[in-house]
Image (tube, rainbow, N blue to C red; front, side, top):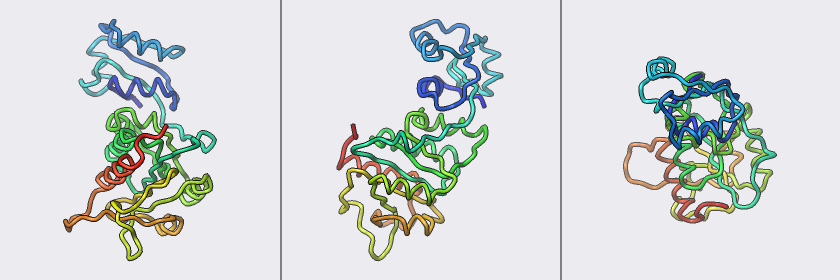
Length: 237
């Protein structure tokens, strides 16, 4: 796929969590920014193109003069899961690339270390996810799971407390909940919520209290939980 935009391209080249086949730079770019991109693209095929060729390859005119041809995001492994204070978010049932990208951007900006998701194949639409995340899809630790319940069990075995976003009789209001030092907050899609397997696996059920009858979107719920974690814990080192 072709990914466009300076922020997205820089994130892909810096993190190297995809197979990269080529980098394209507008032929008129010879400034500090382009020199930086050339530096982090070292060892990769680089081609200079004119504006017309860049527009045609990108399929848009908002590419900013930077493109990269790359494959899907490579899943991170448990061997790279950090020690000490840890904040993860498990997102189940969000298959729209733009919404998932928005969640990535939000949790990264509020100090989260990573995400866990089912192993969705977005095909070329993954470029939308990268741009919506402002590059956070590359910098976050991202476990793309083929068996979510199994992998979340391993997350739990790494001394991580699983907190399910769930409204039930035994649930605790978010503003009364004390965030653990190592936590994974599990969110489901806006319509179906979390699967029974993840609910059964969770240590705590936490709800967001509000008066409106319309349910929050998953992006909205992710923002609420991420901000409360940031308010209590700040950014983990």
